[in-house]
Length: 440
Image (cartoon, rainbow, N blue to C red; front, side, top):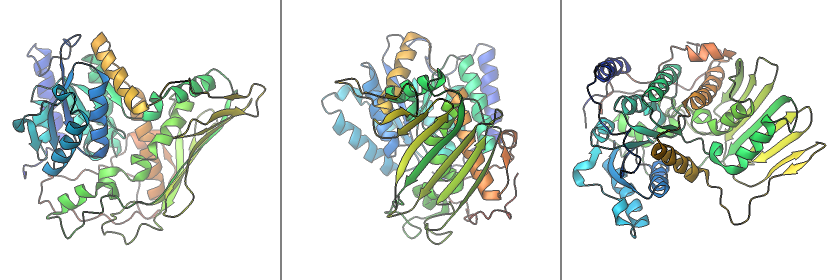
C-alpha cells in the first residue's frame, strides 16, 4: 500500500520503453484487435458510485462480456462495489468473474488490473489520476472508457492529448462519460442548431446551480490515518484531486457550450468565483470554491456565459440557452424539455413512444459495438477540449486574470504531488485569492 506512485516524468520514461518495444514488434498486453466475437474481459479501476454505475452499464452493453478484475486504493470500495454488482446480476452470474487474486488494492492497483489480462478498462478514479491511467491503458493496448473530466491541470491535458493520438494509432476505443453527448434528445437538438435552425450563434448561457450536499460524511481527519487517505476519502473538496467543482461537475454544461460551437475551442475566458458557504478553509471541506461565473469568448465574437454554484437551501437549475439570429434554443438537463422559440419555425422535442434515452447506457452500447466492428470510437479530440475549457475557468477565477486557450494549454501548473506515498505529508493549499495567486 505504501509503494510510491510514479511521477509523471518517470511514467513518461517507462511509457517510451513500451512504445519502443511495440515499434520493434514486441507484443503489448491485450488482444484489442481480436475482439469481433471473443468474450471481452473488463477491468474496473476506481470503484466508487459512478464507477459502479459505469461497470453495470458496461456489463449490459454486450452479451459476451465479463467483469474480470477490480482495482482501487481502498479495499472497502472494491467489496461494496462488487457486492452491488453481484446483486444486480444475480440472474447472470457469468457476468461477474472476479477471483480474489484479481482484486487489487493500492496506488499501483491500476497497473495490476492492466496486467491481469483484461481487454477493456473503466477508468473512474478521482480525476487527478486520469492522465496517468489513460496513458498506462493506451500503452498496454486496452480499450478505454474514462469518466469526465480527463485532467485537472494543463500538464494533465497535454498528457491526455498525446494518449489520444496513440490510441488512434493503435486503433483503441477511447470513450468519454460526457453523458449529454450520448442522449438522443441532445443529439437531435445540436444537429438542428448546427444545421442553422436558430441562425448564427450570438451567445450561449448555461447554469449549473446545485445544493451543497455533504459528500462522504462518514470520513474526516479523525478517522483516517494519513493526509493522503483523508484527502482521497474526501477527494471532491481538494483542488489537486477534483480540479474544483467547475472542472469535476459543471464541466458537463461547459461541454455543451463547446458542442454548440461545433467543438471549436474558445479564444479566452474571464471568470470569477469564491467560497461563501463551504465552511472553514483547510478542514474537511478542503480548499475548493463554492461558486463560479465564466465568460468565454470565441474568435468570431460569440460569447458563452456559464454560472455554477453549490449552496444549500437555494434555487437549483441546470439549464442551457443558445441565442441565435433566427431563434433561441432552451433546454433543461435531466428533463425532456428542449424547445426552439422566437423563431419562424418553433420546435419542441418529442420523446418517441416506448423509448428510453439513457446516455449512461448509450455511451457503453456504442463503445462495445464499435469494438466488435473493428472500428473503435475515439472521442478524445473533443473531451480534451471540454476538460481544458473548465480548467481555464478555474485558472481565471483563482487568479483574477483573463486566460487564453494557449495559456491554459501550455500552463506549467502541475497540481499532482511529487513522490506520492501513503505517508506523504500533504498540507492543504490555502483557498485561492484572485489578485494574489499567480498564473503559471
